[in-house]
Length: 221
Image (cartoon, rainbow, N blue to C red; front, side, top):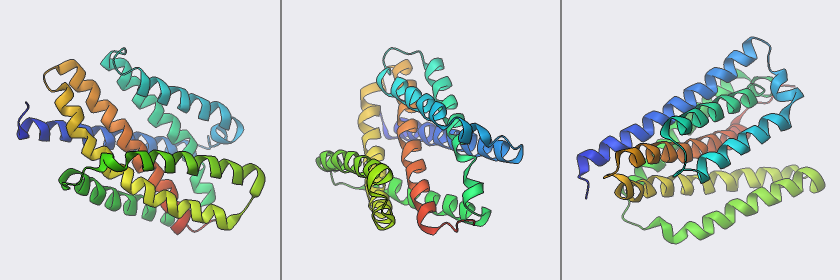
């Protein structure tokens, strides 16, 4: 069984890759906005979204079949594509709101990661409820977008989404130890698990950020 120092090294690699993904996302978003290429996310939103979903599916369900280099390329491409999507945010919210949301998300994310790493409560006992909650939020959000059109329901879903992704973040961090124990004796698999764990937590951060921006962001007219 791996020792604590190698596990800490494993964690460091995971969080380093999370940072790399986030830097790519916000850098691409900034470049697209400043160069006037926001049209990519406006004129072809479904193409961008479908590409993101395809990469996410490939990344998640091909862990044992893809080489590490291909996984890393998928991770970078996904981060960049999400940056293209996020390039529209400065058109909707002022820069101070976006900066505040990024900072607040980082603080909250770090707190939940700390809790997930140190708690002795087995969060996997609640994983079924988290998954059901996530599916329910997605389904109700789609219904609200296309049929209900309720601002109040949208706000409620945003607050519930924040609470849900706080719990999921802690759970995902706690799961890292099990992933590490599964792979520490296989360097190739371990490097893939690092990227897989980073991708899951990257998605947690992004989902928290979007909802925190919706709650605290000042919209432009």
